[in-house]
Length: 506
Image (tube, rainbow, N blue to C red):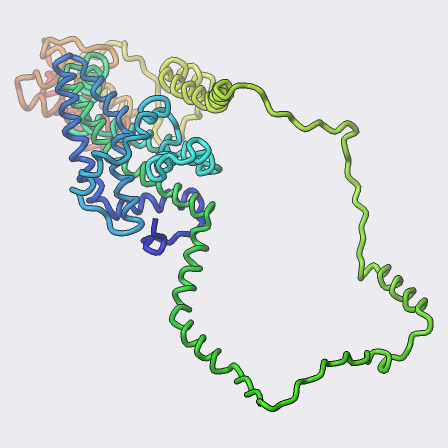
């Protein structure tokens, strides 16, 4: 590993920043990742689905592709590990490396570690470090980042689910609004209740597309957290700083050495006839000559002790803390076997995260059964107060008989100021006349749209147009509170009376 060739800035980051770094690396080397990814996964997808088609077990092909994700994760991990410390490998180089690189840890990742929630963080440890240290190394690299790795797994799984259901739901976008309920019911039956084999194959293809879009980002985010943990533990940023410092001063070392040699004094030449020097006698101490002899040292000692007792020179404080009367004895090493400790850790993890899965299951159950309990909850709330309106609303019974001349009665109601009642009478009379003319029976509470569809059975185009006009005027009055003027109402009543023969003897 050549740290001097690193292509990113190595510094301690938060887990979110580390994940963003890995995702940015995946975006930068997208072509070098997705081309070999497609070249490996697509043929295998075709082979598995063809085999499952012949055995009539098409859903198992999607399960097999999902189970083999750790094998496919070697592709983006290989590209990123080379691109960070040098040049990104070519597509052929990546494909050739998959034959021999990273197969040793796959036996574990396809069996008991397959459902590990922190796979993105631990996979670089086993593939890039050769599995050195085993579980202890994974424990060190995981550390405080294990929780974020689990959260990353949940987030990417949700992203894949959103993509799959979003592609299913995109089919509904091409369905007209009036046929939406029937089409949604048919899509549910086709995709989930009784899907044919071609629909199952299409579902497998959607799952493969979603997995291919999200999985490289998942591996890249885990690789970013792995680099961050190595930087925090091994001090890669400090090592790089020292290497840059060494590079800067390497060019000046020769000049500094030459300058130091020139500044050294030259040793004097020894004379050949100089007599040998006598041994130097030690000089007498000069302290007594400067300060004199101390006759009494007691005042000096007293002054020294007083200085040490000064609180500014030797500050002291009293600390009171509670101590257990019976201190606990040091815990002895447990004699429980290692495999039993692993089982206990697994049960503890299940108890820790099982509550969250239970909470999620309860939330899904409540959402699934909302049609059962939501009306009951809605009835408990108080009815909202009606909004004030400028129109005078009057209750009327739909079952009251229609008059012989609805147009004349409607004009009388209009003149009396009961305009909404007049329009309602014209609408009811028109619906009854239309149903009698086409010899049809409308269901109670039929909507305006259903009445318009039934009116298509009238042979005369003018009759259909007159009926559509009264429906439109009634909708404006009922829903938008827009009433016609006197002239418009009189013209509408006259047209309806002429089209439906109101007021004429039978």
